[in-house]
Length: 352
Ligand code: NAI
Ligand code: MG
Image (cartoon, rainbow, N blue to C red; front, side, top):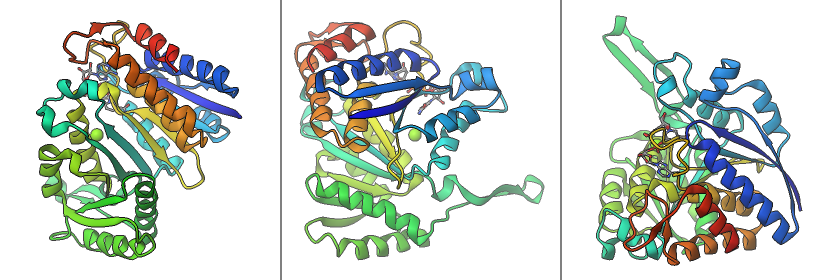
């Protein structure tokens, strides 16, 4: 198989973990006889410095011609006070490529149970997938403005029927590949948008009789996620609720550094990135955990290229290295040896 991938390393630890992704692509290509070519482009703070634009046209054009996009992270203190912000590059690329479906798996590797802030018996066996709508809702609704000379303000939560239906279908399709249990999260006791969301989930659900569907209010879901995370299989929800719940879910693994994500469009182009930010506090120190980035390569193999065996091999290799007793400084595993970004990358690759 031949695939062309755009790499957007971005800021902070972005370039370090992107090196890990590059090394993994090279090794997986050789092992499984695929030709992965990569091309580096700018996004975020680095793109503001070089192009005065967090998402330059040449980055968009290169992505348009690619089979998939890998992203490191954007942002940092250097641009904290600038009018043009690095994060605008992220919102723009999601919108430009219509990356409406954000998939965030939260799997707790056995060896990481002890690094969770929750009790081991609570997190044991947790393996859930949050499917978040990414291009609609409150983050993109118009109007969004100050009014009455600053005495009032409005943000708008808008969705079309089609926007809800396509994310709900993605969630049902995802549930079919897993334990077939879908929890739709909304605030239907208050919001009209949530009542419409519920109706669509129920209608689409008739096409998936094997999937058990339930509706949960977002406040109740937030509690259950912490008290009983292993209860969930697939969670589907709108943009704002998904943003909050996915960050909440990510802490149960004990480190942001191990979690990947996929953002998918209808035409198949996907963007894959770890969930963490640019970690400016450890940038340039060869300390960053490359696992979230490397598992994001695994998600790219699975969701964009249909390479299921290759994807599973990456997950197994990560698990093996953790079980062998190696960790990066962010992980709290008793008795494990702390190694660097580059050493962790090499160990994972050698276990492929
Ligand atoms: P962060 O995720 O960058 O860091 C939070 C904490 O986790 C830090 O102590 C950091 O050292 C640690 N951490 C994160 N990833 C790690 C890894 N791979 N290995 C080891 N430790 C890791 O979040 P923070 O500090 O709130 O934001 C820093 C910058 O990143 C900000 O400019 C923010 O806007 C941006 N950001 C970008 C995101 C993206 O590119 N998708 C997502 C979240 C934040
Ligand atoms: Mg967030």
